[in-house]
Structures are given as structure tokens and as C-alpha cells.
Length: 473
Ligand code: GLU
Image 1 (cartoon, rainbow, N blue to C red):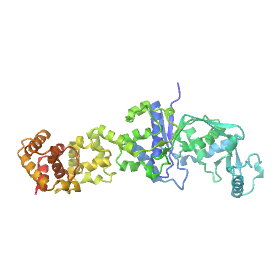
Image 2 (cartoon, rainbow, N blue to C red):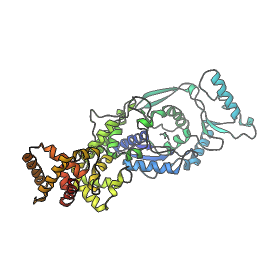
Image 3 (cartoon, rainbow, N blue to C red):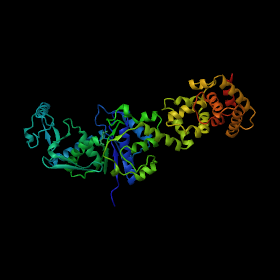
Image 4 (tube, rainbow, N blue to C red):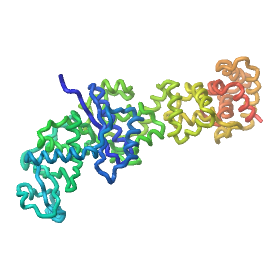
């Protein structure tokens, strides 16, 4: 039997969960689900200056909203500092690490020398073989890895292939600082080992770290997890992702009205594909996702595609689910106040009645909310410019006639309403649009809306007639 897969997502809590991090989390989550394994969450909060509780909370919220759950409690890296020290001491005892007493001035000198000789800065190993009895007084040592000087370190990466690092380029990195705190490089290895992580899936900006971390595993005689370094996300123009391109926190995507299911569907395609499939349910993704199918090349972020995918998932969602979602998301949407203009029960009822028409045309929840605004608008309706133009003298005459015709209807149904408008247009020798457009303007205050007969039916007899009378005068 093969071991169960354990992946982990290991964000640094220095800001929101950004879109690249969300995709890394998604890949880890999918791979764990695909293999029947687990995904752990580790908060890399060792950098005390930059880590904040607010950022941790925002990351957990972002993951939860994305529907990416983790197994067990989130693990704080900082809380494990004693264990990091213990492992560094164990390495000392095994002779795989040593105490280094080089002063800041000496290290600066080494850097200067390297700069002058135009080579990468490298610690020169001066304490590697020196007897600790020579230690200068009053200098607190750091603990450094006794890295191999020759040969090479090979990372067998599921995405990048075999990546080779000549050992002469990997110097004796610091494991423990002089104040006893672990370096990031050391903490990550100890944690991944202790947490039983079998697969490390992360951005390829960590690829060189993988070489150094491999040396730490080897020094402890630990098995190196399988590595998969996924390509970074670039902007649509191929440049590194910036704010302008969409390098925002997931909460920004929430505010723009994207559905978690759509974001998952879109993000997974940045680096991974399944034939030509663009629309994939989360169940499909779990079934099909394999980390070995991730491409090496940078993926490009494209808002238009994200919108199209989102529009699809809005149309594919159940009406009741969309209503429930809007009631929650209204607190996050810039125009969410529209859904607070009436008592909740009324808002829910109207949204439910109107949803089949509304969802057909909305690409985001913001648009959905906007197009639902007519349901809750106060009379007399404020008209936008195009609607006002449609309600010129001729338009108002149509409204008067139609209002009179509707008053006589026995049944306020889409069929009867449509029948009445069609006969009226025929009698008057008007194209249907010439009657329907002013009608839409008077009912919604806009020139576009869901089907106008649906609008009439959803608004109901009293409200519709009142809105028509408001504009007929
Ligand atoms: N904390 C690192 C980051 O946020 C990730 C480290 C890792 O995945 O090994 O970039």
C-alpha cells in the first residue's frame, strides 16, 4: 500500500490571501482530494515584524470563502520554535552543523569581496573546521549547516523535471540565528517533516530554496518530500502579475462578485488543463486533477475569461442558491445596499421570483444585484438617460394605452400580458419593440432588463400599474 498523500498550504501572514496563493492552495487541495489524502495548513508567522493576526484571519476567511478546507487546526510555525532549535542542536550533535562566530563586520567584508570579484555572495566556511575553543568571547554564534562542498544536489520536481544545483553554489546556510530563532529555510524543513508532508506544491519562486532545503533533509537523514513547483501567474501581457493585472486579494474578487466555484474553475486553468475543457465542476476537477499535468510555462491571467466562466456558473446555479448567496454577499458587494432597501423576507421573495430572468444576463453578482435593483426601487422610479429618452411623448402615450389594456386583464400572467402587448402593437401598426421598450423603461427605469413580460409578472399587478401610471402622466 502506498502512503497517504499529505499536502500543505503554508502562507506567510503578511497580507491578504492573494490570487496566486489561492491557486497554490487550490492545487494542494485538489491533489489531496484527488488522491484521498489530506491538506494541512501552516501559518508561517516566524517573521514577527511582518506577521499579523489580522492577516492570518484574512487568509483563513479567504480560504473558507473559496471552499478550500484543511485538515486539523492551522499550525503556527512560530509556536514550533523550540522544536526548530532542537533539530538544529541534533544536527550539531551529528556533526552536520557547526557554530559560526563570524561577526557582522566579517560577513560584510565577505560580501564586499564577492561584489568586487563579481560572484554571488557566499559565506566562506571559516568556522566550518575551527575548534570551538577558539570562539571569541562575547559573540553569540549562529548555527550553520555543514553543506557538501562538491557534487550536486538534485531536486526531482514533478513540474520542473530534474533540477540540478552544483553544491559549490549552495553555501553553509544559517539554520539558527544567534538569538536562537530559526531561519525560514530551516523551519520549513522541520515543519514539513514533522507534519508528515509527502508532497510540497508551491510557487516556482521557491525552486532554489528546494535545493537548499534538500540539503537539510539529507543532513537529518530524512526523506525528501515529493516536490512540485508550479509556474507563477503572469498578467495578460506576459509581465509579472501586478495589481493592475489582478494581483489582488481574494476578498477583492469576492467584492467584484465572483463565485467561488467559478474562481476555482478559472484558477485551476492557470497552469493545468484537461483537454480543451473550460467549464469544469469541482467534482470534475477532483477526479481529473493531477500535479504531473501542470505546465512549466507561466500562466496568464485574463479577466475576460474569468468573467465568462463566472457568467456560466451564475446561469448554472440553482435560483435558491443564488438568492441565498446574494443575501450573504450583499455585505461584500459595492452595490449590496440595493438588497437592503426592503425587509429581508420581501427581498428574498422578489429575488426568487425574478431570478430565472435575472441570472441569464449577469456575469457577476454585482451585475446580478444591479439588474435586481428595479424590484426594490422606490416610486416614482428614477430613470436613466436612455429610459428617459424612451419615455418621450410617443412613449408615454404607449404607456397610457398599455396601462388601460392591462387593467382589463383577468389574469396577470406572462402569457396574458404578452398577448395584450402583442395585440396592442398590431392594432397600432407598431413593431413589438416600440411598445416593449417604453414599457421596460417605465417599469425598471432602464433600457435593458430581463424579459419585460417577466418583469411585469414579477412586479405584480398593483406595483406594475402604479409604475406605469407614474410615467404616463
Ligand atoms: N511561506 C511561503 C510563502 O508564503 C511558502 C513556503 C512554502 O510553501 O514552502 O511564500
